[in-house]
Image (tube, rainbow, N blue to C red):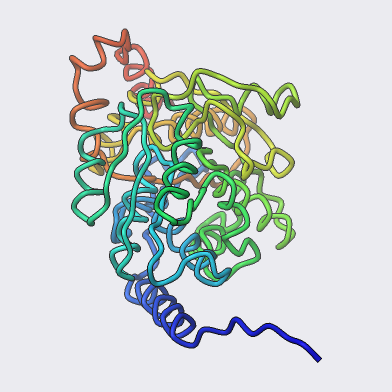
Length: 358
């Protein structure tokens, strides 16, 4: 009788300790807040913002990075000498750099050269290295190349986001939302509104809604220049687009983690409107949010308008994805907007008038 035994007790022990450290990070963190957006009570509709910017690394991607590390460790892909490589537009790389440092591994982020300097500085703060490419379409190829060159592991958030997260519960973002809504006037949301970067969040929320048999509908918002919206409308999974100027959401191709079948509606939001909504949220709530949050809120406002016109009462939940401090030199800079022909004034005026409606 023959056998091959590859058991490595030292590696197994290291992986167990790495998983403990990643899990301990979650135990040290409270759940993220669910803020009430100030709408006139007479309307009978409520808007809530789930604030994912309060995670240790400041964005929604902290959840994804934790899941990806646990997935890679449990699968045996990440070991005590693995260089972790990721393709990212910024926020996922910030969070992954944090977790790589937590378990003592080197990290390389492959990102478009247009990524905000604030995000690059955060990745480097956590000990990561940034590999910038001029053509965003090459980040996958470069990530594979660097993983082979270093003998490392390409995390590949765009493929594994939807499967690394337990969509049935385990305190995922969907379970957290429904739990926090239990004591609200309309505890089962009429709509949940999220963006799509990897597609992982929408896949998790959409599956959870169906699994728990809720009647909540899922709206996914997409910025201009992204392939997701046109693909969802046409059914063409091979659709491509130039790419998005709103960091963290939108992609030039349809990513493997994007699941169109769990989405009830898709809404395409112009970049100028996303940025106007980002600034409007700060005006109304005092919360400093990023561009993808603006995209979410712009779509949520459209849905709220429809609900009011139909005489429908209920609640809408969307996400604060990250903070506005990451975009001081871009979306928060009027000269940056002017150089790119983005006029947010009409959108800002329209959003301001929204709250003045009878």
